[in-house]
Image (cartoon, rainbow, N blue to C red; front, side, top):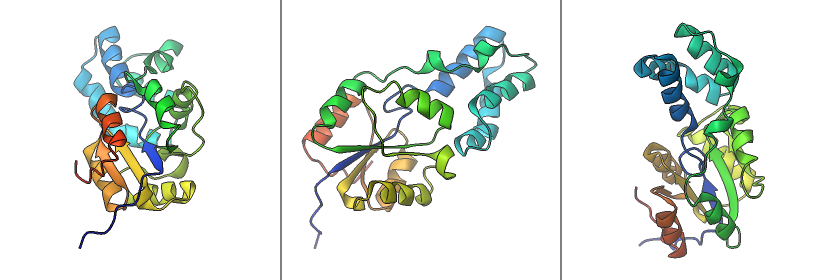
Length: 202
């Protein structure tokens, strides 16, 4: 017999790919064009080293400096800045304003502290419950970061709806007992939430 589903009281949001565009990927493309570098080599550096940033071992500026130095470029200060890449996913801010009237909101993001703070400073209002991988030392889809989130928000897992653009993270959230779905744009996300659809599949 199927157990009764708990109403959603808290919506938990990823940041990169849900609220803001993928800043790291866009910047890598621009660096490759600006300095005539092989984007595959920069992508390989990202694969090798970005986890250190998202776990707080190295900072955002250090990551970009070391990437360019390895590529043979002496970076200038502009190369180490992220402000130009803090662009909103269409409809994200309007959606947040609508959601806060119905739900408590929280953030769960794999991110550096610098990039996370810069992004959150641009939101239309503060979301105090934010679990950032670089702060807590674990990252999605590790179950540990979902336990940290649930401790932070103080809610039953089944009362939380998690929205992320990465399917492995959605599967991890479901395994942790949260409701979850894969983000495919804000029109789709708002329709799912308005219908109070459990969406226990990807």
